Figure (cartoon, rainbow, N blue to C red):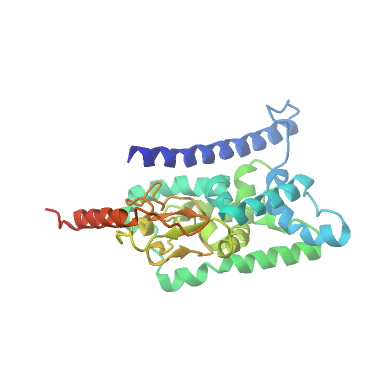
Length: 298
């Protein structure tokens, strides 16, 4: 258990580091506008360190050889780096790096303490499942409208931009409204922006269908305790899948035998199908754990 907690802390440390980086970027922009010297890293804009900016400028770049308004070369470079990482490991950007996702997750911890088992289960499945495809509609609208206008229209309702540049006159009332609703919603639903509205998460989620390193469940050692389902922030039914290819998976690793799964080699990221010579003993071990959980060993 201690070992698993340490591995969970590694992810937390990564999240905090990237969150602190974006806070510093935002602070330095404010200092620059006030005529003060930026701290440590200069004063890059939030747009310059956002890989989604590279996505919305693709059409303009390949047709006109130029970026849309406010987008920098760094966004384009970051986009390709994130795409490469996502092709290998899935949307780890969403689960480990994105500072707005981190904020949602931290607020969600408060909601979990308040509502306990009801948390993240308020929306009925019949409504929840169709809503998860709304972010793909938003992705198409953002890319098409940005290509037509040549302007970064997404920032008009982007809660990430509103949160980390809340002091700026560039932040619209609409984006503040979306930000407020998202933060309040995070008390009831884990990562509501990520689940239902984020266009970048929608794009990265597609990589789950063909990423190289996959999340696999060993059906022979799985004890069907459903701990993986309960800890999944995106409400994916992991316990019924042999290979998790759900477009909502954010590669957070919380469900794996590195953290939540109680049986070794039952749920983990793998490049190839493993042939474990000790499979029989692992199966026996899984059976004993299952018996212990059910009370059969008493």
